[in-house]
Image (cartoon, rainbow over all chains, first blue to last red; front, side, top):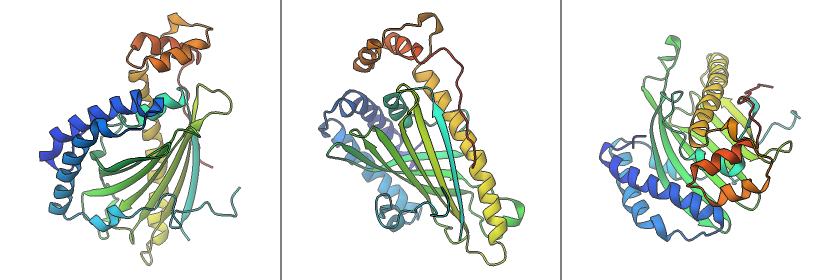
Length: 80
Length: 212
């Protein structure tokens, strides 16, 4: 899959590969240290943030958290 | 008041498999509308993994809708929590921009099936709203229709990815329940994974995307 920033593609692939191994062999096994992929995540997300700025995608909207906050949508109470 | 939508889907793969495949969902033959996928942030807190991703998708709108939306792509923010204790993966997605025209919010909870511990249920809730005077209902109806279609695409695509990651080997049906545990411990061992899955019966994949 491509990154939103074409110059971030390589960093993304390296990070994704690392993450998928970490998720399967570390996180799901109960080892939650994030050290393994942290350096790759850092350079990759920095690249993506630059690309987002360049493409004028609303960063504030992206940074907002909704899940598990009061803003999260609730099921209509009339429905069962 | 917008429209509320709910549907549920059963995947014939265990929760750990679904959770792993979730991050490898794109690209797949049913995801041509997904253009890019990026991790914005990710961190572990306690036994939970919090992730935020940005997806961009093509934004096909009907002719009459072009007066409101002329951009060819739309950004989608996906927040997710993998909760190891409860064995749930919860995702919450919303569109960035054009939210006055049409806001589509979707929450999906993937959890272990009550019927079979080797299956995973995905419960999808959708909220579709529009604030365009005079076109609100048309836009909502369009949104609901697209939700339905996307739901189908999502299930087809996810099953495609799952079946490639965890091929079902019908010749290796085994009653040994313990092999499930074994397979979990040897994730890189494809043969083990196949025997693991054989337990969940050699039936064809059943994935419904029913709408209430």
